Amino acid sequence: MREKKLTLFSLAWPIFIETALFMLLGIVDVFVLSQYNDLAASSVNAANQAISITTILFSTVSTASAVMISQYLGAKQEKSASKIAALSIALNFFTGLIVSAVFVLFNRPILSFIGAKGKILSLSCEYLSIVGGFIFLQAVLTAMAVIIRNHGMTKISMYVTVGMNILNTGLDILFVLGFDMGVTGVAAATSISRVIGTAVLAVVLFKKVEKPSIFKYLKPFPLKDVGGMLKIGVPGATETFLYNLSQLVITSIVLNFLTSEQLIAKTYVQNITMFFYIFAISIGQASQIITGHLIGAEKTNEAYRQGVRSHRTALVIALTVSVIGAAFRYPLIGLFTSDSTVIELGATVLLINAALELGRATNLVLIACLRGAGDVYFPTACAIFSNWAISVLGSYLFAVVAGWGLYGLWAALAADEIFRGALMTLRWRSGKWKTKRIVKENQ
Image (cartoon, rainbow, N blue to C red; front, side, top):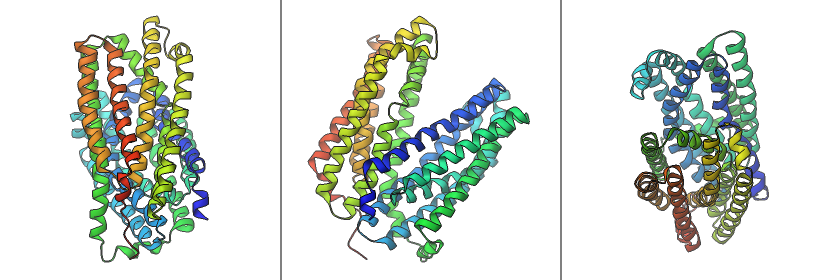
């Protein structure tokens, strides 16, 4: 019964909606505050930079648990899957508590370190002390959503995200524009929506998926499973950290060498293309779930065919969206500005971006499939090399040395995605990932 439900479409479309709404959640906070006070909006943006770093910690556990749970379920080892579920919730909960304590006690030095000053610093501290204090809920929410998704119930986490967005938006408007609470109002709205979202997801998890008694599997504490989770999760977390670091280096190149018009065009293009690759993200996450189940069931040939189909589907969608984006490139950039120079720059970049999206779609889907199969080290090594050798170095060479400016920057980013995409395609077709199965024989 379970395998019938694990189709790409049935899993991917709820993840697509959930991902889109998750992106909008932060945008709503900033938008509502922008109607109240520009400094307040900037302060939330600064605080969110600190908060975003913590997601790397939480993703270490959630990435590993996603792979292990799906493979155990595919192998019909439900008890082992339940133990990993309990372990992931516990680890994220205690890690989240530590992070929450750090944000409450040290929010001012943290925000000063990332550059917040004056009024923005005081407002950022106000926001971070509240939202950061409840960040452990986000950690638990992430862990529970991963468990539910890997049981094939992607609609449930989508419904919870929809509810959280509606509640957060309503409370933002009420607290900020109604009660004049400013940053405190936005922080309270975000925290309340997370409290309710976590509570609802917990009820669903322990009624429809698991039983509260799963925590008995943590006695004695399964240190061996923790080690297994770290082996899977740390490479992905390292890749994410180094990718973010490479983006900071690229940003410094951009800030120092590009014109103001190029900087503005870059910002607008990134905001537009963010919605281009949501499709590939959702297909990738759905493919990882399916691949994990199939690998757990030792159906490697079926997993291979599923990966190929998922990749082709993502490429078709990426190509379609990119062509539409290229066709309407002038009106799209024109939504943000009337400056003819910026519009011309952005429109040209959207043409170059078509090549980038094909590479990005390949990476998002095939890396997810490889991860679902337990092959985590090869994609990480390739990503680290490509990010720094092609994306960072190429950005400097093309944008600055060659004098191509924004076009050179985008050419380097596209080259990075295409190069990695080629490596991931070769890796998937080689079948070497078939030997990386994590699940052992029934214990």
